[in-house]
Image (cartoon, rainbow over all chains, first blue to last red; front, side, top):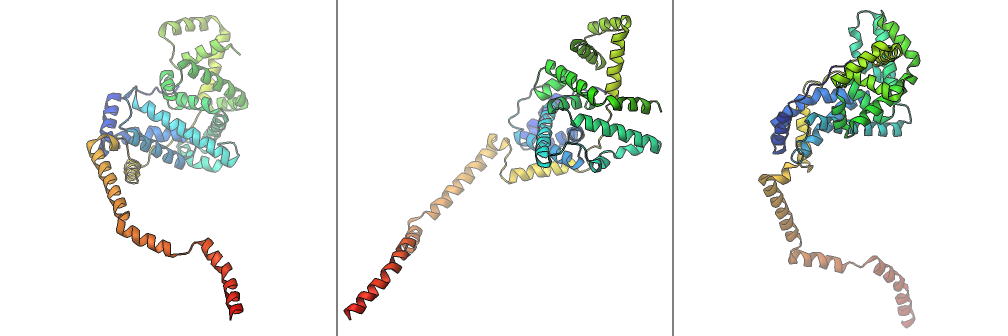
Length: 204
Length: 147
């Protein structure tokens, strides 16, 4: 189970954003430094492409900068950033699909850059097994409908609570639960054959 | 496969989303019902099988680039919200507008307008040029007949 994301020092975040809103670039830099890793990670998990993820995260921060003076402090700033990032990435995926007419996430080339940490595995066999599992996960996730994919990534890989996901996607907790349930059902169907392989991999 | 409500409850249990009293009750049910226990284990396994590597963090200098790009966007006229909300922003906007109006007024000053309109008036329009060309041979033939 992934680690829950700690509640942010939201007062501080909003204060910094207000300062950025009055033209304080250092305050804006602090916001970027505070949230950059998390946003890049989220974009990378949704887009499966490092360069696109960096561009997307940058665009989200620039949007925040431009709206800094207008945003009402409500909830946590990172959920607003996550919302903008998620919508931005899903739009990118839609455009990508329109352009390529191909299922997303089938490129082994893209995967190499994405899978660099595989080298941490102690043996080549385990590296290979890890890569296979990651590839299966990526393919399964990329075949989910967008709304289910967003909820799954936020819950499983970003460690957000149902409440935080609901706030991020501006939906009810019931909708989060329902989308997660449907995502798991779809994954269960798609990964039926992979699951046995995973359990063998874990036993090594 | 379990019904939807049971499965979502088990999902919530796995993710620590159930209130403690409900979670305790569900754990008791799990001890009594092996089928429910199997469903929980299956969900747990499925959840654990979703593996992706940890993406790399933002590269060094990322924040500096973002701040510079945001600044660039402002300089290119994509002004942030503070531009229209602060006194400095308002004064700058007023000065830019006043400058634009003054520049427009200079361009539209009467002297220059006369020069410009005079230049335009002396030039035949396309239609006039066409008519002149059509009329020319007739005039020439009249002159020939008259001579």
